[in-house]
Length: 137
Image 1: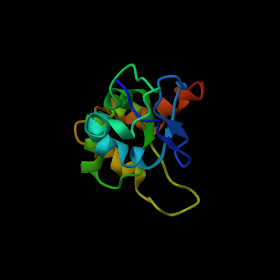
Image 2: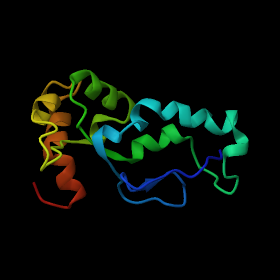
Image 3: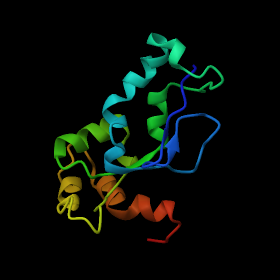
Image 4: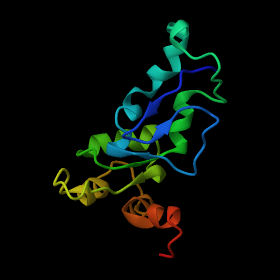
């Protein structure tokens, strides 16, 4: 599958298969990508002239969602449910957007995440971050 390269300075990532960091920092629940990823699967099919033919992906853009980690600055339990369905609760970390008071109830949003098990909630509240940072918890 071919795709145009996506570079986003705010999220420090690109969607080429040749760039594969251990984890990627996509802020605010992955931004638009968690909701619009299926559009990326179809972009080069609909607009092939707008795609860089030198970039060949090993899998569909939506399949890469399970390779990234996102924070939970999404504000509602429904958006947390959506992150769990699209990206996986095992890839969501609690966020605060400190020093800005953007989200003051980030822990509550995790605790109310529909369908999340206790183990997934523990992971979102720090277990996954500890693992990524190689901190014994």
